[in-house]
Image 1 (spheres, rainbow, N blue to C red):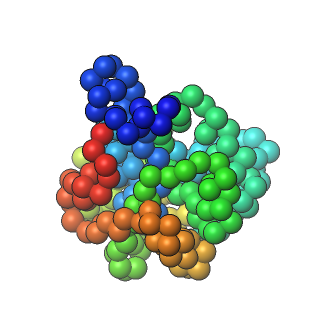
Image 2 (cartoon, rainbow, N blue to C red; image 1 turned 120 degrees about the vertical axis):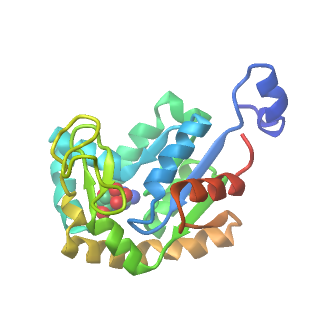
Image 3 (cartoon, protein in one colour; image 1 turned 90 degrees about the horizontal axis):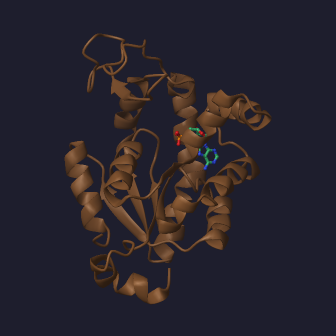
Length: 231
Ligand code: AMP
């Protein structure tokens, strides 16, 4: 999009031209609720929600050699090697819908990924979410997902109508292998060691927008909206 199409987004939209480009990263520990917020915002702004966790799970489910390589790391709660994640992400980035902007959820996860991303695109904002560790553990260990439609539940905070069954399709809910206690501990440690340094990295670039992640999903969504330029 030409430069002035971005600066004069309102005028261009009035003429039926595309909305302002929004390129945003959601950063935060596992269990903080960024996936939920990411899919809401992506729908609101009409931009693709690029979750490297979802892309990797789809690759694992497809049983490709790449998926088989990633599976062991994911099950253990470790990061998948950078090259593999970058190969998957670059393929998705090249699709035409990502030109109108994107929301990256779960990428970058370390400094090497952040500097690779910098060579691929500019960013408008990095939203960082945080919650106390005990809240994260409670959220992750109670999470259950539908293996068919991917709806997400929580055994106490957001239970399905019939225990253990998806409200939408009645399928038996499952626990993600990396939501078991050993993997949760590893994921939180990996976040603290490898991903948390990205907060300073993006703060230094003037891109970081901290978002309080406590409260209802609607309250958090309002904070997300307030932290971003209007559509
Ligand atoms: P998530 O759904 O974001 O919690 O990701 C699930 C798992 O996928 C992580 O625990 C990692 O094993 C892997 N993963 C997701 N994104 C990345 C990434 N950017 N770099 C390396 N591994 C990743």
